Structure formats: structure tokens, C-alpha cells
Amino acid sequence: MTMSSSPAPPDDTDALHPRERTLPVDTAIPLPRRTRVGIVGAGPAGLLLARLLNGNGIDCVVLESRDRAYAEHRQRAGILEQSTVDALRASGAGERLDREGIAHDGVELRFDGRSHRVDFPSLTGGSRVWVYAQTEVVKDLIALQLADGAPLLFEAEALSVEGVDTARPVIHYRHDGRVRTLECDYVVGCDGFHGVTRRSVPQGVLTSYERTYPYAWLGILADAPPVYDELIYAHSSRGFALASMRSPEVSRLYLQVPGGEDPAAWPDERIWDELDVRLASAGSRKLERGPITARSVLPMRSQVTEPMSHGRVFLAGDAAHIVPPTGAKGLNLAAADVVVLARAFEHLEREGSSELLDAYSDTCLRRVWRAEHFSYFMTTTLHAHPDGSPFDNRLQLSQLHRIADSRHAAAEFAENYTGAFSG
Ligand code: RFL
Ligand code: PHB
Image (cartoon, rainbow, N blue to C red; front, side):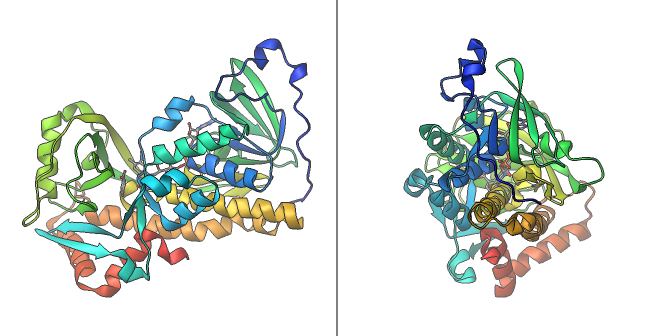
């Protein structure tokens, strides 16, 4: 990788057609033509990277295909590892998180008629996790980016990345009904699993490792207080259930359902009844029911792209890897990738050395594969496989009893869940 630096030239909006100068209110900046780092996607990965780069005086532009409201309201993750919280604080987005985030020191596992709490701090030397919704992370990062006047274009869909083998890759994107180009020194694809950046890398360069699971999650958001003050992961012969939360008044609940299930097959009463049965354990409380405000069915998949970079193009977050949500790792991996990448760009600017950028993929993949394994372990241990035999069920229960009965097994679980292994 070469080290040439070419600061973005002044914006040349005067050369634009008057229609191009009419920008959506929330961008309120001239359309850039060139940048140091072009970022595709304003999910948590793209936004956090932009904040970290801007914080170090590195010029970047974020292109997001959807509008701001869509980006801010997409229901997704809820659990942040300490390292993700630290990165958000470092990016300036820690204020509301510190006020409204809820620290959790453990989770409850329910199986075989028993409940077992795994205590994180005592097993990991002090680690914990935070409940703070991805929607709120995204809102905080967008607000900061726009308040700074930093380039973040909504409804700007990247169509392709060209010149990925050259020193000046170009992003072609559609904005305001016109196709435009953004010349970059580097491109970072933070455009999720279905994004275009990965597909712009020449065939044969990247290898994809993947696995799909024969079940899905029905996820709901309900105006009902959480049944318990920590998360409950429940194994049952009828399938997996998860009780999570967004606030003391709002529950986030999941049920294992067959792959491709139609959410219409699940009227409200059926959902609550099934949650009650699957989450039941000796002496447990029934859920308090309330209006369901959102519901969707989510497929379960594991995927890793290797390597996570090619030439001057880098992949981060879901664009490079996805995990089934059972381990609560996706958002945390996305944040970890861009922390490594931001440090590497800073090293390039300060020292003129591309050493850390060159090491980006190898550095990230160690953590990625650990999280892939933990997510696979959580998924296959807690879900009922449609073709699973009673023998398989007994193996799952044996594994869960082992976590409950062995401090070593519990510590292994706690280190993986909190991300404590990665220091
Ligand atoms: P995102 O969030 O998918 O953002 C990608 C962005 O790129 C935009 N985009 C484009 N923009 C311009 N041009 C194009 N051609 C584009 N194509 C796409 C998209 O519109 C979007 O805005 O990826 P990112 O930033 O890598 O973030 C990853 C996380 O969103 C994801 O890993 C997590 O949500 C996964 N996940 C969880 N992760 C956790 O760490 N903890 C959790 O508790 C957790 N729970 C979950 C989850 C994912 C879930 N679903 C929906 C699968 C729970 C669920 C239900
Ligand atoms: C969530 O709160 O959305 C959530 C929590 C834990 C998971 C997955 C999702 O493992």
C-alpha cells in the first residue's frame, strides 16, 4: 500500500447546476467531489469511523442510501460491550449513553426448569455490558456529525466503487436523481451485508465463509416493563426465547420461529402466551403484557469475508462479517473494526506509515472469528434444531449445566459475552 496524501481540494459547488446546490436540510453542506476517506454507509460502523477520523482532523465523506429517519429508527442491537462504550465516548457520543444506558453485570440462563445467573464482574475481573439501543447510538452519532457540519449525505446510494486497485478509487453514487462521483484516497465499505463495496472488489480476491441456520427470530418491541432487571436467555423444547429491554418501560423480546415465518402468523396473544411458556422456570414471574409497537422476522446467518481489505478499499462491520444475534456481537464487532481502522489512518497521517492499515484485516479477523465462534455456540446451544434428536437436546442441556456448575465454563461464557478476552 502506498502512502501518498492528497488533502481534499476546496469544494467546487460553483461549478454545479443550481439544482445540485439545493441540499436536504439535514446535510446543509456543499456536495463534495473529493475526500481522503470515502465511507459508504451510515450505520454504526460508518458513523463511528467518521467521528473518529474527524476527531483526528482526517477528512472524510459518508454516503448513506436511506433517509435520516430510516437510519435512525431501524430496530436492531441493544447490548454494548465496554470497549464499544469506550469508543463511543472517545468519539464524543458518550453523553446520553452515560445518562440513559443501563449497566448490566450479568445475564440469566433458563433451561431444564432451572435459572442460573452468570455474574460478569466476578468472572472477568470487572467487565460488564450496557443496554443502549443501536437506534440511539445512531441518532447520537448523526447529530454530532451534522452539528459539526461534516459531510454526511442521506439518500446518496453508492452504485459502485471503481479503481479499487489504483491510488485513487472512485465511488459512483446517486443523489437527488443524478449520478455523481466521489474521488477518494481510500474507500471504507460500511454498507452492511448487502452493500456494494464488497461486490466491487475483483472476483477471486475475497473468500466468503458462511453458514445459515434453519430457524429465525420473531422480534417485538412492547410498551411493557421488562420481566426481570437483566437479560434472560431461555432454552426450551419449544424453541429459544430472549427477554431483553430498551428502558424500564419498554421490553424487547424474541422467539425462535421457523425460517421464513410470516409475522402475521403471530397475533399478539400467541406471542405473549409462547413467551410465557418458553421463559417459565421454577418460581419465575409471568410477563407483564403491553401494546406491541414493532415486530419483524430476522434470518440467522454467519458470514466472514477474508481478507477484509484489498488495495485502498477496506470493509468494516456487517459489510465484512455477520453473526446470528444470539451472542449480541454484531454492533460490537462493527465498532471494534472501525477503532482499529481509525487508529491505522491516524498512524498514516502522523507517521507516514501504512503499517497498521496493511495489518488491518489480520488484526480484526482474530476477534471476528472468536465472536463468530461464540455466536455459533450460543445459537446452536440455545435453539431447537428442527431435525434435532433427543440426543442433541441432552447435549445442549449438558453444556448449559456445565456453565452453571463450573466456574471455568462460566468464566469462558462471561469473557466471550462481555468481550473481555480482547482486552
Ligand atoms: P448496518 O447497520 O447494516 O449499516 C449499513 C448502512 O449502509 C447503508 N447502505 C448503503 N449506503 C450507501 N450506498 C449503498 N449502496 C448502501 N448499501 C447499504 C445501509 O442503509 C445502512 O445504513 O451495518 P454496520 O454499521 O456494520 O452495523 C452492524 C450492526 O447494525 C449489526 O451488526 C447489529 O445490529 C447486529 N445485532 C446486534 N449486535 C450487537 O452487537 N448487539 C446486539 O444486541 C445485537 N442485536 C443485531 C441484534 C442484529 C439484529 N438484526 C436485525 C439482524 C438484534 C437483531 C434483531
Ligand atoms: C436486543 O436487546 O436487541 C438483544 C439483546 C441480546 C441479544 C440480541 C439482541 O443477544
